Image (cartoon, rainbow, N blue to C red; front, side, top):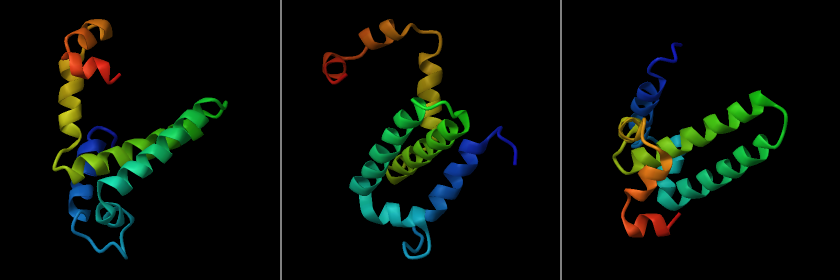
Length: 113
């Protein structure tokens, strides 16, 4: 399997599972649980990424980041969004200093970070 468009291919698979049977599909069960269930899983996966970052096992870290990306993509799909929206936002920010980008956000955005 090529890595070149894996996010697009994963988005397509996730979109198909949105209406799947929660008893037969882990992803469909996440959708059935709603944003709260998906968000709880993202919180769990983010903690596992942080834990893996403290260890000296790159394969484990990659595995945990893949889990986190997967679950955030499920969240995006639950809202009718996909990875291309995030890729477009990253492209918009590319070449812009993080300090400048953050300063360009509204006051309410910067107070949340």
